[in-house]
Image (cartoon, rainbow, N blue to C red):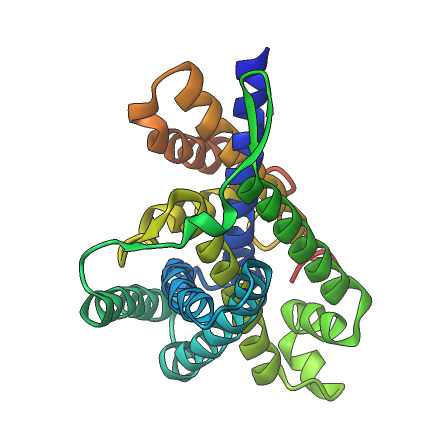
Length: 300
């Protein structure tokens, strides 16, 4: 039983991170029907910018809470601006082009950003100051670390904030209107270009937060860290029903739980395979995902 509880805690932790990344995929797809393969690089860029800022603030004598809080906020802003720049350069000029053209542009931008990280930050792992989040609670063989508590709290706050933004504000209403019909939304005065840029910014900000949490959780980041988690998050978005925010959250938690339990009870060597098995199974048996693609007000 203790082993099961430990795997459950680890699964929720990992699933929360996947959910944050998956939201970026599903929001962008929901509003412009683009699978943004460069999204995983925002996650990696967030991991790097986070360690740079947090290490600098720690060097200035700031408290761990201030280092993490301020580092998280500034990193989310940085990645939001980066995503808006990418959208302007790589996607906006191709809005009237075929989907294949935009998809190739996304793949090219992913390679460009990953190589940019490698050239500017090096090929070696960059260590996070994990001593800030060391320690935790123990009940027998069950351990709940402070970092896992931080991940639960930060992920929960961000997911609640995103839901409030999308479903309770005028900005969210504009996002949903643009997702449903860009022409009609423009006729009622909504600037669809700004809404699309904002959607990219929000998705990248969430991915940046996930990058910092992964950096603290695993102790380091590297320039290629965005690829595998990005693909798993994409699988989570498809599993939940790509284009559906709630579906992305549920899909992320499921993928995280399946990966952890499969690694714990079956084989840790093949833990990365299970996400892809789920992706293939969903595409084959239920292409619309668990919650389907809802074209009413739940779609963004």
